[in-house]
Amino acid sequence: MLNQAGNDYKYEYKLYNETGQHKKALALARQILTKEIKVPSQAIEEIRIEMEKIDLK
Image 1 (cartoon, helix red, strand yellow):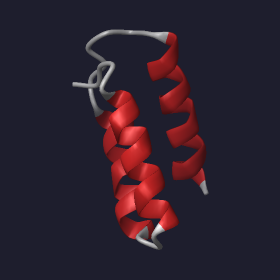
Image 2 (cartoon, one colour):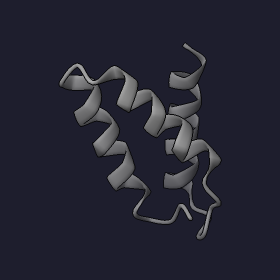
Image 3 (spheres, helix red, strand yellow):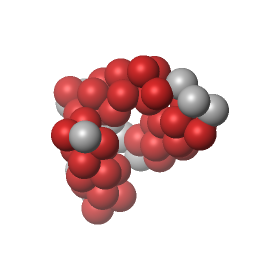
Image 4 (cartoon, helix red, strand yellow):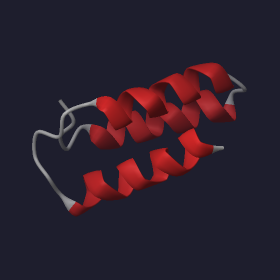
């Protein structure tokens, strides 16, 4: 489930991407998009929108 810890996923994604681990970053973005949202919030929605943009590239 995706809750406020969603920011952890966002930072993990950035770490993978910045260290050249693009396949892991993309897999994580897709995982974030398929997780159930536990606590809806503006922050979670922003993370999902950012991950959707990544997944579409």
